[in-house]
Length: 317
Image (cartoon, rainbow, N blue to C red; front, side, top):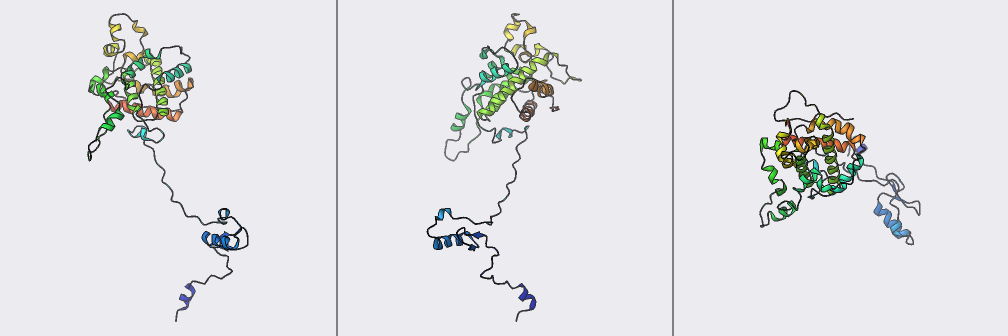
């Protein structure tokens, strides 16, 4: 004989007319059921003239609780994985892709003469040396060639376009001028991003170059001066695009652009003006957050490559 407590805990039998839990109601009669299959059978047997495909799923249908997906935290802009973000990822792309269109857009925003032969633009000259038709091969082709033998582990393809740059070690990096370094960064990024993202980055770099040329000559270096800063054109003049002409006295030195005769040591020092004044004043169509993230990535890349001794100091609007 069961105890009173056990009798209380004993499950009560559901009454025939009980509506508790009957959430699946027929739209053709007052009947209600505990599950959709039961409702389906009812309509099939009791309302054969009705279309089963239009049978209601019932009011207050009980739904399974979906598992909450954890929010994916994107890699920080300073990370090598930044360009693996699904919105950016793609490539490889020829680094000269979309250059003329991007240059004309920037010159239009800067109210500069757009009737220019883009192939004479110093940055394009540097970038063209790293284009697919000027380098030993396409990195994508190298990826297909690597690990062909069965069971052989594929190795990441080495970008042949950067082989010359990689041969320059330590202090020799300082002999690359700003245009060369902008070009190397663009080549580096073009292997990781999709076409639409690359166009934005290309516009960003062209704007940064124009900004550096504008304020670089009058920019006062912070004290104390870090070791390794190029103090004048003599540090880079022999490797600039116009080096031979300068040595022969054919070009007026005062007309030479800052980026053509200086290395990248001071580039991080221009970020505040670039973000808070230059891009805004010229209404460049790059979102503020995107510009900040690209600045953080670019300046970190410069630092990691030993191309500058300055860490990024940036105040945003």
